[in-house]
Image 1: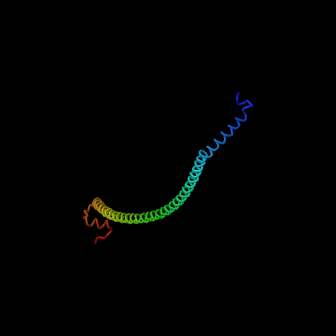
Image 2: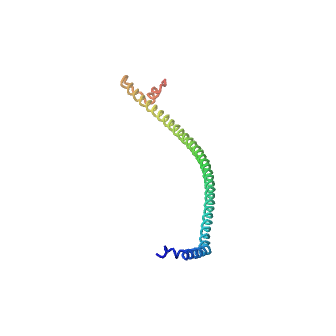
Image 3: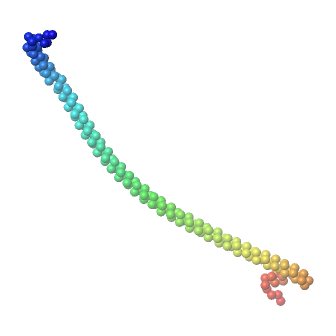
Length: 161
């Protein structure tokens, strides 16, 4: 193998040094600056993305605080509306209760009037029946025919003269 031949070591080392310097010069002048630019642009993009993410996080935190404030305001308004609705419902219930009480009072008074009228009719019917019974009893007992007016006045408890 020619690489291991001791007599060719010096030229091989010279060509190695020339090739190494040439590759180093090519890499240092063209490839490495582009790689450095790429790495730097990636670093800038990462930094920009991190800054944008931080700004978005801060904006989201602000939006969350605004949402929570708006939610608290809406809850407070809802409680006020609920209290008003409860108050209105209580007023309406009281008004309806008063109307129903008045209606029940009117119905009770009408029922009392009907009851009084029925009582009066029942008493007049009882008097008429008592007069008829008294008239029949007098006719059977003493054989005298008593007139309707006399029987009714006797049933009513009036004295005849």
